[in-house]
Image (cartoon, rainbow, N blue to C red; front, side, top):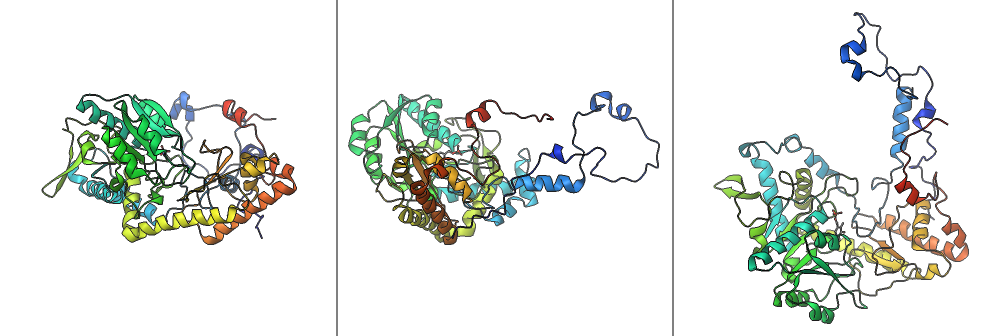
Length: 492
Ligand SMILES: *Cc1c(COP(=O)(O)O)cnc(C)c1O
């Protein structure tokens, strides 16, 4: 049975203003035993307001409980599974947070002289080495601050390498199953984007690719596994086709929890790829905090990597700024160091066999969900699933219920919605990525919820179409909320 009770959500909290009553304060101070001063005189008139309109007056316990209750409104990985496909919202071991908070690391300052930053530099170097090993590449820059930033970095590296050969070329090829950031990065990098259609298996059409790769093509950007959760089986042939025409193969490696310890992009012909440390390698994802999108490259692209580069002379680490082919800086200082510390801690704690197990579990969990939901939801592509699975609302749409409505009903069952209507090549997509960190019990709860919703669609489509029912607010006007946000409270 589904547990429909959600004690973690108390959704009838009043506004702080409504807790207010005149004269209440959240502190107790002893009576002054020194002469009082006029605040305006002591602080300056610009710092003192005679009156603050409608300022809430509440006691300490009311403030604490109000905000503690509000904090539970945010669905998070601490409260339950987050099946948001393409995003790898997974639980991250707390120990990596502990390591990132070690005082000497947390307080390291980018202006600290090199002699006093040797430990931090060694951490970065070890992480570069580990990521090169995991991806099968020759060199890594940790500088980019996010996945899309890494994509742009790699495109600029490819442009620099081609320009050095005499012609930066004009086009980047991108399959329709790619992540949405890829075309944007290619365009910002100064390239025209040409779309290539996937075949019936949800993979790159190799014959079509062979037709369009010419001397105008700088690179192919391929997400692998792609956004259908499908591994590009002909990737080695794809690399050969590009290389034969002097073009590069770029891989979007945000989904590395589908490959780690099993396959290395460097071994199947990839020239450059980015990783999302805030997906695969332990930094919590989605909180709006810092991330990191390291870029790993083959030797041919290494001279162009952003400055500074770490180098070792004798036993000492130093930063090398004098690299004449470098594309320059992508970011202030050296990247988001705290994210790197977490990633190295995560990699070392798992070791090679542990990372391999992460991958096996991510793929197993996605396939467990696929098998159990296949009888209820349409599976548009039959190719094997890796770390995520994409269904469509084809069957439910016949009852007038669409993917967005099924996702909203999922909220009533206590889950964060899956990814809605993406990838675009699947009409009415339900994109589900359980990640490796969920227990069988949580997966079963999710499967039960999805199954129950499919049955509800048959029995009472209106119930699903008007969901969510268990939340404080049901359907909001999402467009108006984004375009005309009301950010100021006005007394009634
Ligand atoms: C998340 C993701 C990105 C973008 O990463 P950001 O850090 O959000 O910029 C790119 N490609 C894929 C496949 C992704 O899943």
